[in-house]
Image 1 (tube, rainbow, N blue to C red):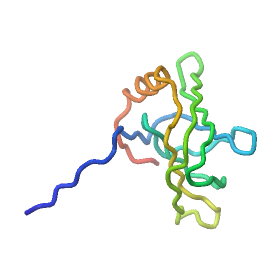
Image 2 (cartoon, rainbow, N blue to C red; image 1 turned 180 degrees about the vertical axis):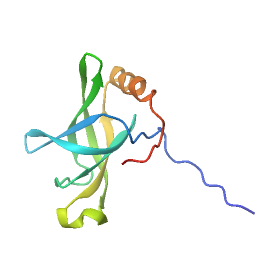
Image 3 (cartoon, helix red, strand yellow; image 1 turned 135 degrees about the horizontal axis):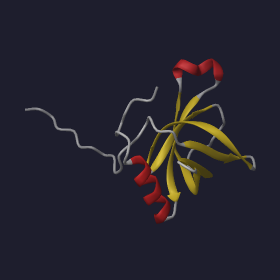
Length: 123
C-alpha cells in the first residue's frame, strides 16, 4: 500500500521573483539574498549571524512600474542550516516566519506573487 505524504506548508512558496529583502541586524538594514518567499515567511542565504527563535525587523522591497513598494514586518528565525556549497564563505540558509505583518501588506505581496509560478527553482 503506497504511503501518502501530507503537504505541511500553509502557504505557496515562490523562488524566482525580483523581491529584495533587507533584515535589520546591529541597528541597520542589510541586504540579504532571498531564496524564496511566501505569505508566511521567507528564506535567505547569508553570512550574517542570526539567532534561532529571535525576532528581526524585515524590509520587503517589491518592484513596481513607477518605483517600489516597501513593506515592513517582524520575522522570527525559524530554521538555520549550513550552505554546504558555500561553507568557505560562511554562508547559511536562514528561514524566517512572519510574526507581525499588516493584512494589507499580505495582500500586496499576494497580488505581486500571483503573476509568478509557484516553486520555480532558485537560480
